[in-house]
Image (cartoon, rainbow, N blue to C red; front, top):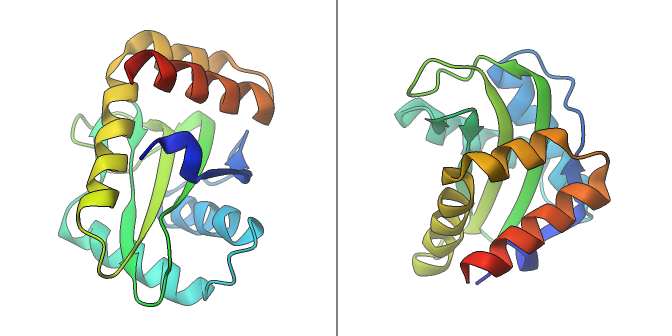
Length: 154
């Protein structure tokens, strides 16, 4: 499963306004809701916050991949957000997070959401990709970069 197949352009935030972890999770949740998925906002926020309590999904190098599983969700959904200023997300390297991927998976999903997590991780390992995403202007450019870089990997 490709990231570009589950990332709705309506769920991309070119310039996040959040200044802390909680607000970042809410802003990313609202982006997924804008994509018209009919999800319960409180249930989504609760699912990702519960996952964060287990340990930060800030993986370092300015990247965070908050995620959660939801009962009744039919397919994997992803939102992307970029914070130019960076947000303290208690990342593994204690550095601010600039690039966020919020991943929601069906409760019974096992393999598919792991494939998407792995894809995001592979893409974000490359410092040039991270810089391209930081330098991009607009949602279309962000989506194009993700698609191009994913095509190179797979």
